[in-house]
Length: 134
Image (cartoon, rainbow, N blue to C red; front, side, top):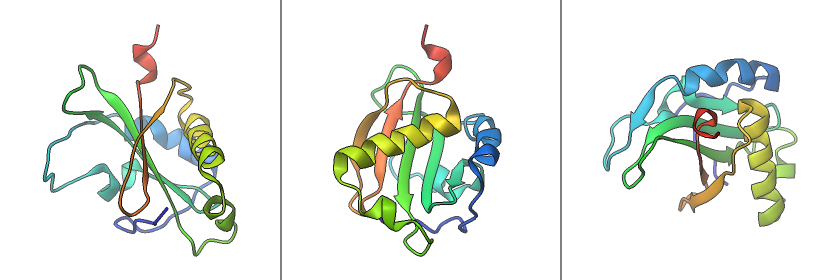
């Protein structure tokens, strides 16, 4: 998973990331091809964990979806001590642990699906916002 440095790396403890989650989904992004501004370019949406995992979390209106979705993506900063643990994981444990970290930050334990893996190895997941589940 390649690391994206559009926003400077700024690791925070999980407790601080939890406090910032509501701000990350306060604005809904309308996704379109060729967007000049994206959540990964905004510090409000970027969550740097102490172990090198970077998550970008946003509320998005995506083409082809009837309702807004939470989009979260994960990459790893290889220069952080301890990040090798993430980089060495096999696919299934890696996906499970990224989802677990998202739940830890967001409190949203709705089923998250892997939507894609970018050419740079960034994992992209989609899930329903917590408020849409009965």
